Length: 361
Image (cartoon, rainbow, N blue to C red; front, side, top):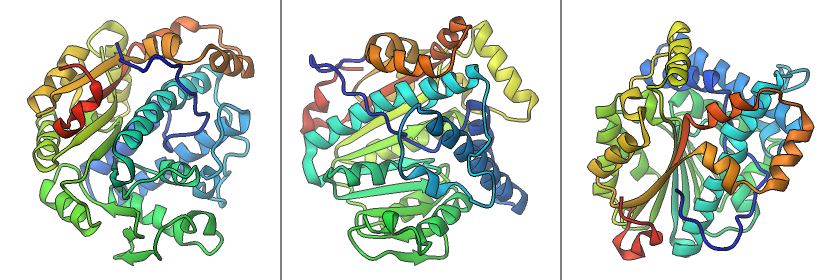
């Protein structure tokens, strides 16, 4: 179970990332990882548009608030207008991909920032059209730098949105004037956006160093539905490099789990039929295997919990009831099954920070 402070969690009704429904997200990440061809670049950009429109539709229904999201939705498309999902998709999307995930991830982000102060670094890998930087910056949170990493076709599009003359609400929060590099990377003091392949450590390390990363500073890695789209050996290699390079490191990871039961196999088979492979699925057969990967990659402390427990025990009842009133969901069993197949991990190798008080893995 997740080890949380005695005081109740504060629910943050804001979006953590511009995430897709799970199938859309799968397609986006798979495209990012598999190729740099023009067709794949287009697919990534298109699925990212679809994801943002789906998310904006849920925001407009009142599931949560995100004042920055609309700036990343192409106004040449529907821009979220007229996009409506079935209640099952909407509620599953809200709670699985955003709602309950927001509460826990935001809890750990705030825990990290409170623990390390303004020397904190945050790196969001596979960030897509994430708006977390702007939300925590607008709230007055203090940190040294925030780095977003994704496939270059995604970062190029995000960069163009940020650079629009009417997007001062975005660039106005940067500590320094933004400097663009190769139309894919942006450096602005406390905010950095870089295009890199997460499977290529030399490339990733180089891009991080271009963002003036401090390997000795306490650093939080955010990875949401990322590791399953690379092979187990590749994800272990990435995590191992991170634990070896950083002096004090924490990781928040949202990932599929229990995929080897009947429900999980149906989920995976449906994605396979759509041409969406899951190279890292073996590490997601159980929470124990996810724990094993973390330990073997060098993490020493942490907790892992499935989202069903988060939904029923960690999400405030008033927030659950509020969203349930927006649209009716007859099949609550579907929601339970979906929640049991996603997990949240908080792991660390941070001896100087007492590993945030988390138990040994």
